[in-house]
Length: 200
Image 1: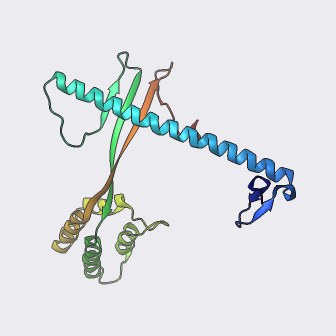
Image 2: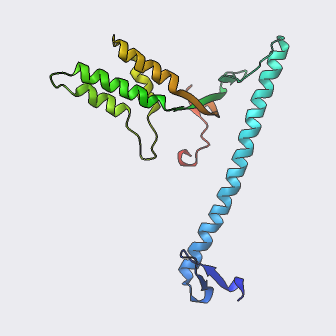
Image 3: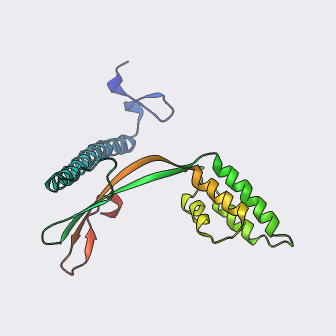
């Protein structure tokens, strides 16, 4: 069998090209050609991001050396502006927060509080708390909602214990760097230079 005379279909079967409709072959060509270009563009963007991050870090190091400062450890968010103030590069560092098993301890303590407070039947607060602990379709919990519970000014020893359990359960799973570019237009409005295909 000459592989050049066959194409694999979605079920994994090898189909003779002579038996495939011309429109299906043309569609296949268009998809694969565009995908190849998209992969090349992805690689270009990945290299550009690495170069941009390296350039910002190198400048920060040079700037620090000029003042005799030693910047150790993880760098924070950085903004660089052009001399005329019309261009800006912003480097942001974001931590991905996850919770360990102590979050379940916190939930149990909160449930105890709600049961004690809601004698008589008002379950509105239970609905609010349960909503904070809901997971999305990927099974991820909403970090902001959980951490937002700590801002509630509730004077109850068990509640404070639950909030301490939430704080103790927080760990940083990963850190990601983002770099964004901005330019001021003719109307004096700052616009982001989008590198997102959907926003172009």
